[in-house]
Length: 450
Image (cartoon, rainbow, N blue to C red):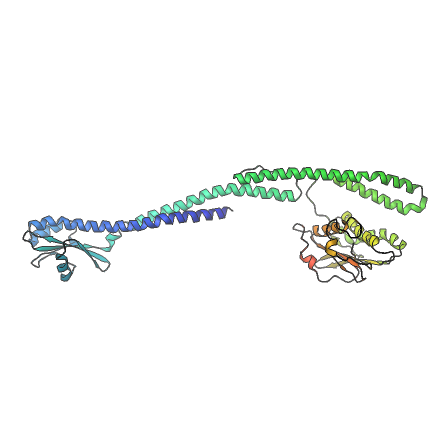
């Protein structure tokens, strides 16, 4: 911005300088020309008294020498006599002798001023003044140099003033931009001291007010999440007491209830923690998938659902937290169990490629009729909350990848979660990134939550 303001100042000052200095330069040149011609006329008038007194060539030569410009003056006498060194032709002298006013003629690049003088006996003499071209431009170069110096000083001064003013604007704008980046990175404590032009002061004050409001809204949202999660404790406690009366047969249910209570505790703890800038985390996707499939396999066996886990035999690092990936996998597998009939097969595939890592969950159910609508937050055509797919999509995009829904080789839905192999260097990618435009997926089943 400082460079732009400096260029604008140079352009404005240059236009002003040209508008004034070019006419001044022309005027200086004209003044030098007029001065040279006026000096020639003065010299010609100075010889008129001498011609009125005498026409003696000797005495006229003395008069010419007294002017100090002997080499430039010549006198054409009526009897054909000459004083000095003439340069005009006889024809030109004869023509000028008939005119009562001075005549200026060109002699190459130089000029001649010829003036007729009427003598005492009525005869006509002609005074010739030679004006060299150098006299016409005497002092012009120095004047132009001074004007050019004035223009340079004007431009330098305008640039300096514009730079000083622009530095205030740039400094204020830069601080506002840095504060916005910090706020976007999760530092809700950042504030700025408004300074600079009134518009930037107003923008700084609006930024501070926005940050304060965001902090209040976030705190209120966290409190609400913590309160809502805490309300679950009462029904969970009642459910645990009921399961304790069922004996060893309910051990699997008690373990599931314990895990649910642990998840609720984590939600409450996370909601109570202050906001801070996100840090890069990673987990072993293969280990998470094996652990979650072990959990869901019991229910799959009860419902006689054939299932298969492919590609999870070796560690595969992806840039997400293990708890978040577990929650997403549970949501997607829960969709399979919730929205497909009992006995429907499903597969989970962990695929690695040079471009990233994919988790594909496929089933043999009825599929998803409108994948785009299913990805909209809160949209569900099956009576659920509609948040599971959106949470999975945000997890993938937050890690620099994407999520896609299509038809699986089993005939049902397939959900593909793709993750970058390294930590993302930019903000979350939009849904239209190259990750969502992948043409083909690796072989094997892939799963799709509904």
